[in-house]
Length: 492
Ligand code: NDP
Image 1: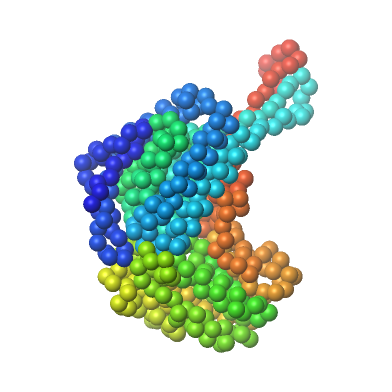
Image 2: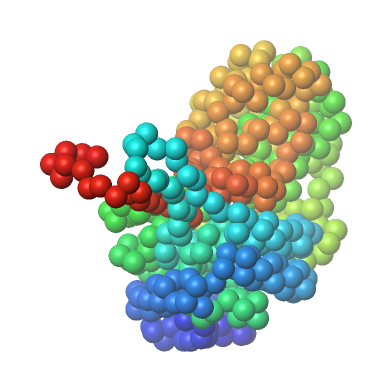
């Protein structure tokens, strides 16, 4: 088993604790890598390295164009390593190789796009209302950014933070999930080759409480960019608030995938299946509630069952596998708990509802693709994020009821609408309380399009032009051009 090291100040170092922990392959349930157990002294060193790098001329003194070119060089290196990195991710988090490969092939675009934006960060000249004064704004980096990422799409969600943060001229200390740290550490090797000065990106692995908390509360961290569950997000927000730190939170969801009776049902069935089973339901944007118009409800469920039953489970490293294991044992137990809760609440289990014992699932943590019908909007299975392959089907009569049910959750990350009516599509896109609305498609994301949550699904936006602003602060500069100092006792 490879024993990994931390990346601090451009050097690969052992953790101060002298401890490592095992990362477990979810398909075999066997350990396959040793991850450094970082702690506060490592964070102190990493933040100090990032702070030094932030002020050093080989980073701060670079032109924005040179900084952008560095990001684009990194993009090329990622593209060259995409195969290796996707295999590492799939081995580490159990997600399908097909999914991880497509993410890795796409990740370079974040560094190309934000690399391109680096030299388009411009201030404004304000036609100020005071004679004899010139006023303009500068957009400046914040300083050291704490990036904290989850296990489900480890490098992609890191790219969403690192690319805009670096393009804006910040430096970064990155804490990946304890369950998916290997790809982060291998990815770390690329920064030096791309020409990033030492300390611009530092990686400290370890547990949330031992690494995440000292990082968030470190006085020299200017901003926290976090993706994870909403309960952790709430805690992270509280910790960051004590230091009045800027924050971006990308949290969970309970997204509604809404099918109207005028929809193309072939497409809608595929859309609902892909919304919940494609990533074994382990995605923040999972369409975990299917809202089906009552007039097509029964026939739609039959078609849904027909397609879901064909899902091939097995080794995530096999390109033909469609549903892989659940990433961690606690998560596997949580999914099975929710299945029990749904049954106790009276939901009708129409598919799955148990651990998968198919021979091709080996010793991994597999749960059968599960569909509950007869779900009432107030049931826990319809309100709480399961983060597994469990779908709740809820009937509705008309648009008003669909909107009411869809919006009746603490979350607001995404929603899908299946309809052939343009009027209905536009009306629903306006009425749904979600940061992303997909019409006749699902799970589409791009580096160009802002992504983030309404309500408890998050704060701030990643991707698109909006994202770079999350890593900048505005300075207003006033210059007297009249040469007369006015009355000192009155505000100018
Ligand atoms: P967690 O919230 O458990 O963890 C996310 C990250 O936070 C991990 O790196 C974790 O470290 C760290 N962390 C945990 N506790 C603390 C703490 N006290 N202080 C600082 N950091 C801490 O989420 P998961 O990794 O389980 O990921 C799944 C969750 O992420 C889901 O709920 C999902 O909805 C959400 N998610 C949201 C997305 C979005 O964009 N909105 C996208 C993808 C996922 P460690 O691993 O060591 O515990």
